[in-house]
Length: 315
Figure 1 (cartoon, rainbow, N blue to C red):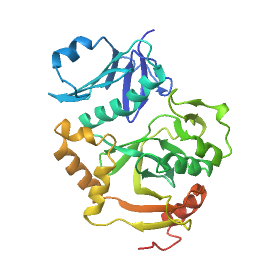
Figure 2: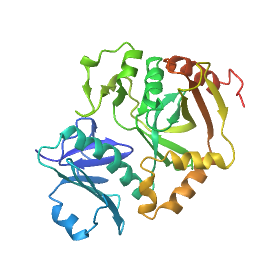
Figure 3: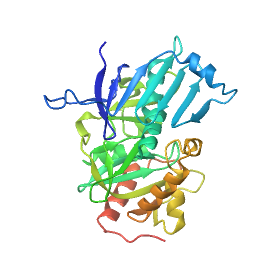
Figure 4: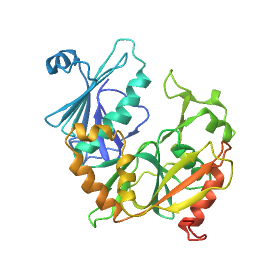
């Protein structure tokens, strides 16, 4: 199969590996000869891994490159923000291989290119992008799916790619038209798990195509919400409060996608400067929910009212 051009996160990717999750790039007579921003290649990396002699460490960075190994899946090599090389283990689940390309590999490429990848989802509300960040299981995808069901298009799921436009505004570039939802979220939306494929064979997280409500253009960032579930607290209302001071900077750094790979690549100063710039230019709030009941639509109402200044912030 010939290499295919894809678009995601504001970049053009030329891939030897079919990536059905991604949007195919629209090529015109003027762009057909353009060089891709990033190339994704398939190549045997076993010799290079041995040459690097990393011992028992599964992640190593040298000279603007990051190299990592996932047991029973493959070796992955990212170089200077321009190339991803993948060496699949024989018999590896192709969906799991692509999951690492779409997540860790692309996030590292973004870091190397100066694009901040936050761990979250984003939707478009009144012409602005609103990002929802949080740790795994916080409900980011569930909330963005609930917003999309109310008519607010999905911009990206799992990774929020933040950059700056010519005027110095923070912007969010579109990811790709798919959401990943855990089984309880499917049940909360009345969706049947047999209608969707799992992200890969080892987990009960489902890939949901969202082409019909996917926003395909970059949008200026209007605000960031950190989701903080408190399942052990007595069930009550949804609480929203502003994040201020140095806590804003800490929040952005702690929710950088694969943030543990920042220091390995010598990018700590870049992250500090980027997060500081973002912290100074955008509103950041925290929204918490208690108990185990499904609160996605209650959170939607609270967020929309807050964005449109229909309610007071609780401090």
